[in-house]
Image 1 (spheres, rainbow, N blue to C red):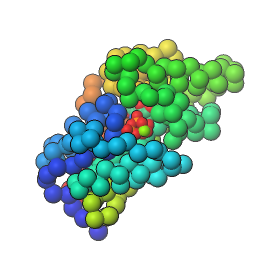
Image 2: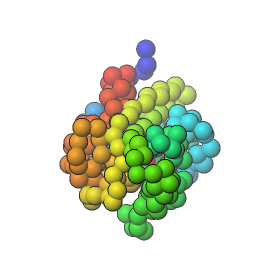
Image 3: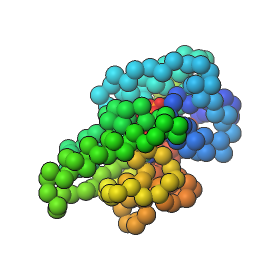
Image 4: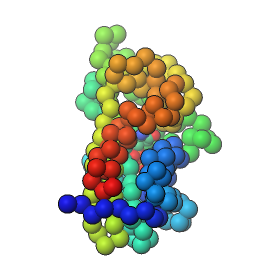
Length: 206
Ligand SMILES: O=P(O)(O)OP(=O)(O)OP(=O)(O)OC[C@H]1O[C@@H](n2cnc3c(O)ncnc32)[C@H](O)[C@@H]1O
Ligand SMILES: [Mg+2]
């Protein structure tokens, strides 16, 4: 049985403002006081893993060195026709996309690359994609928990909507017409890859 999380401080080991906002909204109802790694002045570790779980653990272990329980999120977009790419490298394809609030839409450049590759495959190319989210929870004494969530959907182009973050304007979940950037945050929180992973975390630790 996994250890339970008692209300108190929780370090969010992410430097992505969009993610931080979503994770805060998910954990605060459970009595957790979310502080970001940047607020604590923690360094941003290099994501050298080849899986979402490895990268999530790298980030959470590094933040747990602060002495607080740490929660990290490693996520990405997997495009079926591209054999699951960009996957773990989604942020790399978008370069430093977590600055997008201030500095423009780097994910848009990454999507230029994705759309270019899909276009070469012809007009009938399969546009199925999924978002994956792996959450890692690490206690300062080394206990660890990893959970994974996903949401199936497809890519749309051109982008639509101004809500959410990252690739939300080009992702339409299965059975929906609107992109993740066109629906209310509450709606995204109910069906997203992050919500799916978080539901598993809640079952285990609350
Ligand atoms: O590592 P941290 O500091 O948490 O921030 P990051 O942005 O580098 O995050 P990842 O390494 O996990 O890369 C995830 C990529 O997938 C994108 N992404 C993840 N979840 C998303 C969501 O819900 N909507 C849109 N894009 C998302 C995100 O913008 C990144 O480009
Ligand atoms: Mg990252």
